[in-house]
Length: 157
Image (tube, rainbow, N blue to C red; front, side):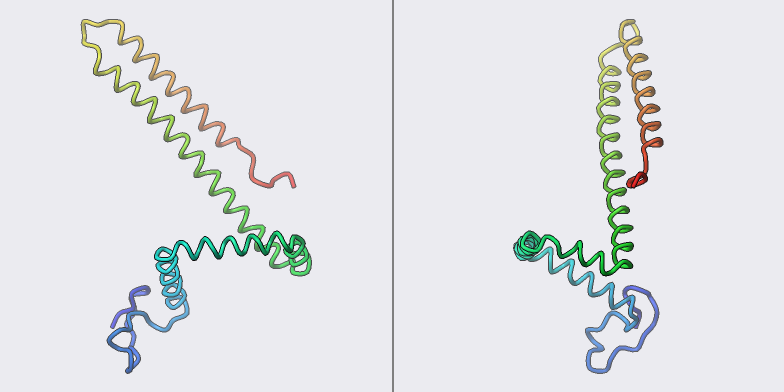
């Protein structure tokens, strides 16, 4: 039988051989548990919300807990700091890409609208098309430069 995750052959446990689809390797078992948890959370969103609210309430009741924990566990603090920086950078990058995509689609839609309205006899639409193309290209170059020159998250501190 082949494992669903690593695709290696494995011998299923005799009692569960009909149902077992994943080998006993630690990575495959971790992936199986994560998939099961994702499915459970998708099926029980109300429970996930209640759990999050309970955690937030506990955090407000114990505001100094994490500060003290990070002070007492510097390895955890460094690891968590790296994780949070990666998450922040990914979210910022994603937001920039979404904004750029939205603006690009609007500008290109304006160009497409102009294409349909004029014919070769209509000379005034050509300068408008050129102006929109130039506007789009200038905007695209400027936004690319702004993203490239954006400072790294947490570079100053």
